[in-house]
Length: 468
Image 1: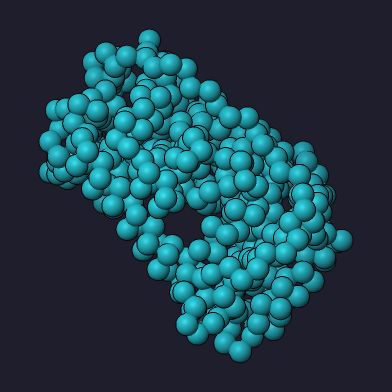
Image 2: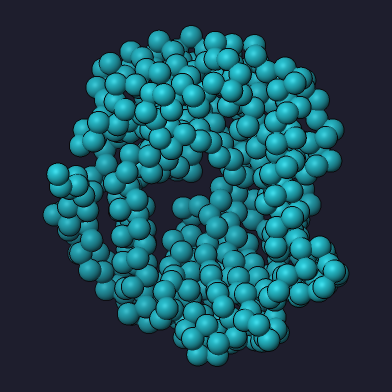
């Protein structure tokens, strides 16, 4: 049986949405209506509900975002958002301990998980179309009745799980603490992005059960959440089910959203780290515009021009020509209050961070002075467009994308504009973004040097510079 036709790509091509755009001109040849046409309503209790019907495959994804992440934690409570992601899977009033996954797996569900980042916490599962009610019941029960189940034992066990996750992914991982050191310097103390989402052991240990319950009552309320259904379902029946299971949950107090918080950095900060690793590593970091703000799309393109493929500038220079790096990557890490553009290169044996930094800086000078070329920009646009389009063919990815649009721009119907913002970029606008947002000195440079006997995750030797 042939695979389902890629309807999004087909619709965009038919409408001319992907017609060539001259790299030196901002005028696209033709506009297109989005092939994804979600509808959004709001329940009386404030829960946002988005429907995206696609009947090609008999599955439906349930994707629920709570608009709370680590940036929303109070001082001394770092890690609460991530801790709650774990607690939410342990059971609720009508769902016994450790049965959430069992219910869904027995029903044939896939992609069952939850994640937390700086800006939001999400929960999702893809179920056979005839099991939609089960997924809605499970999600609603933990939204409405989690605290009827969660006790000191549940809280303590999940706190230990989170601390072990931190040890596994950071404290006992090669280069594991370099990210924390970089983030702490990139965003000053007091900025919501100063600390990592994983949480600090000190804050996790100091937390009491009542602190966690208070966090839940404040943030895990219908009016601070958006539910997306994407896939094969009947909107009328789904509306009735959503109202049945989520409608009775009381509205909470309004949850204020933080405003963008740029960081005015004027000089370079240098972090020197020694670690029990084999190879040196260098990371260059800049604070850049927030998700979907002017400049964000252009910096996505800059990342592709620098490291998107074997002919990209930094890959060709460091890995192929000079052969001083075994890997190099660059990307715009888009977030709600401010973003972080980072370049990370890992040296080949026998080479140093100084060699890597010198070569990277030489390429950045060329980028700032001469901008990007037509063919480079065309390849970068094609890569981003194809990744976006094919990712959106899956209901699980599409549901999360629609929730992304709701969270960051306030509406789910943003797919066509999301593509267009990249397609509209020009050689001039991309070059200007590189010059404006990736200056030579207003950045953080993290240098990791191998040292026998040092912790594998690394330890900071010194931090120099840092005036803002």
